[in-house]
Length: 153
Image (cartoon, rainbow, N blue to C red; front, top):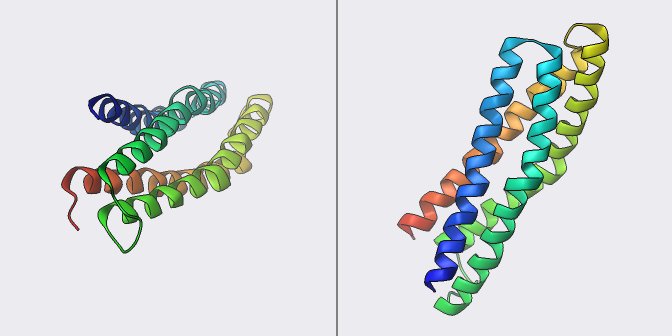
């Protein structure tokens, strides 16, 4: 159980740490307003998702399932575990269905911004949607983390 708990916590650190720091660097690049820096940053955000967020996600899922089975947690009724799984699913839907397509769009639009010398309206629009979706997709795992630690119900 200790190894699985370690893997679960390591996955949480990779997952939450990356989504928070990626947003930080993207916001900093946007505030600077340099199209080349923005383009480089949004490409790196996408790369960091593959290098850190995805492995963290896999560690969370695999270790979480193993620990839940070992502990004998049922999936019936509303508990902190079921609420966490629902929120985790919502986060995954936001990430896969909204944020990744928006990141691809930001990469494409930021490349155009370099050619034009100004930040395009398409980039600004994709970035605004990404900020809203990303904030939600970051807050949900923070709530899950609270549930996992406190097990309030």
